[in-house]
Image (cartoon, rainbow over all chains, first blue to last red; front, side, top):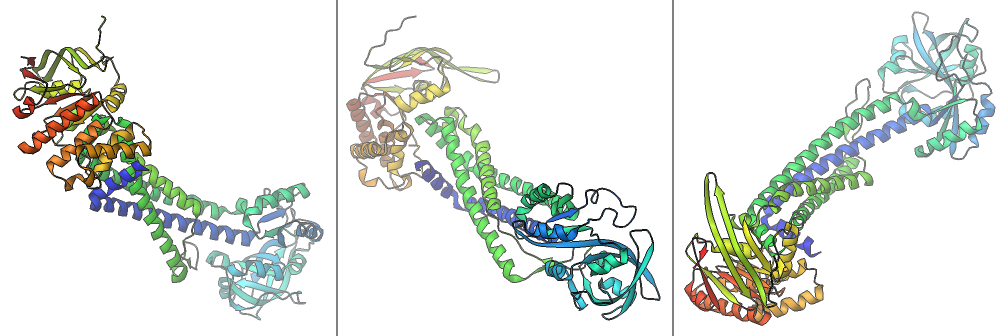
Length: 404
Length: 229
């Protein structure tokens, strides 16, 4: 404790210089924490969005995820009803959602274009994926399905088809037997998912309508939803144990976009963090280096009295840690203040490439991140102090005492 | 070689030689100097500038090395010792008083005097007691909480003496301890150094230009061109 107090007093010896170093560390720490917090917020949002889109665990036929189909629904899942009941009983599962993926041509009588469709259970689908869909006009699909099937289509597709709620369109698709089949549908709603390329092709219809179009009773997949995303692997293990003949994947396995964004952000913020470390290192070397030069005779005196070089270095390292801790503490306060400010400021980021909607600018608080940043700053400060004082502490005592 | 050291003998230097080289030029700072100092003895090293006083003092105080010769401190042969061992010996057995006092400016008087005991790992209670006694003996107890900058030259040197003597060293090295003091204060400092060293049985080696100081010493060793006269 005495040594820490000694270090504290030495830090205060040149207050302006120590304050400058402390501010540099604080700004560096805050930048790292805000950048890291933003990355964490992005990861969390993307993970949540992806899991909402696909389901936390997706179950399909053993060949569904890896093999191409020669005919539609060749690798579809039979007995979806019984499987749904079985999965729904698993602990933590809050919904089991069937989906049937299909594609074909959509026509308004004047012109046709390609669509990518999904047969869904309207009630659970719009409840679970609702936050990702913005209704431009119209409503969700009716449940139960009316006699004339309904569709919800992307607003870019609606523009192309000159469709609005109540318009009639025709879906044309290949059946499971390889024949063409068509069904007339009514537009119930027009939505945007924020990605123009998807909005240009998107068609959602009730599962029975899609099955009727493809002449099948199968579904493509069953998506299992849970409350806690961290329990995904546990659920996956349960599903694999219960139905070993089926294939199951987690949202992370299917989240190519999430993984590439995470990889990109990790690199960007990793480089930012490295730059911050170098800035802090230079600031500390400058501050403590000047202190070491100014106190060379004092070092000689303490060495003559009986301090080992290691004890001299320890004193400077403690000084570095005092400045580093002060800077890290101030940086954490600045980062926390920014985090709270952004919670209330409601600032929006511009749409990322390939999307038509922006997203909230928020920064997550993370205890491990804050602890990690503090430890990193302390480590850098300690290393800087060691670097500048090790040589001076081993300088011949007579030379140190003669230093002017 | 067998060397018999008297139990009261604190320092023994035999045939000490020291040469400084600068480029092609070499200067013999000490040329075979021998010196014994007994416990409680106050020895003055005098001589003109460049005579080798400081070099001999540094070698005596274990902060410099001789090129030739032998040295003993409290009966312990110093030759061949590693730097760490030398530091440990200084920590335990050698006190220093410097011309410019060399007090740590951010430490108050109490903490400056306490510092050598901290290095020795003395308990907090014992440190408190010994520092208080040391400050009383040098007459600066009322200034215990003051920083060195708030003291006069004489008071600072008293603090330095208390710091040097608090660990009851075998040897005290004093380099021009009165050079920056007026004559009255200088006389007081010499008396104080002499009295405390005598009470504790510490040998004191003083390098000085000051004849008044030399007059108060038990023995005066005159150095000229690195040789004892």
